[in-house]
Length: 247
Image (cartoon, rainbow, N blue to C red):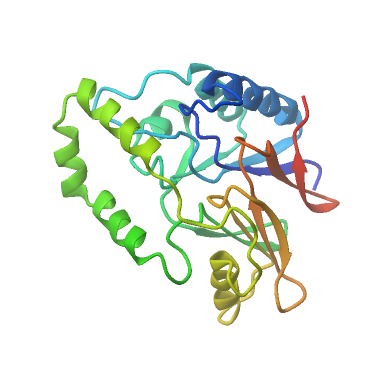
């Protein structure tokens, strides 16, 4: 394994906070992507890259030009970029696939990377509980509802989507509540009963987590976010590490 595989999530581009604007965050993310370009074997972006996103047939939300160009730089070099839809940008369709050459995933995937088994996903809607969100997710994922929303003019549809995105908040603890209460830990333990995985990597929680599961070998890691942590995961010949980017 001469190069490294990188994982990151929850950029929430389009969301301004009291600490930084979306453009400031975008520039920092691009700096990080530039810093890993030469050693990257593959890049996995595990959802909520955008705080809101909806693709009309001929219209996408404006902005993010530098970020999209940086993704294209990876794919133009033959470096695979895997993009997962999150709960804030689940209405991605084929734009990033056709224009940038990414591989788009709407559900968690199982993959073997250098003889280790991974289960990767954004993390929303997994594990026990949160039935309200799971129902809403099915509504949003309905092709009929997507078609109906696309009938709204972008001048109305995009601001409406942005408004609801900013009003929404994940009803989850902002700390690691322990393996008995952390639903992604519970989900990982349940999956381990049926088959072996070395690593479970998710986003969505906006926390940096590296937890060894009950079998003593498998690990659940969470990428954290770029609103508070500027964190990512690196997998190379030395193993799997949860890191923080410092320009």
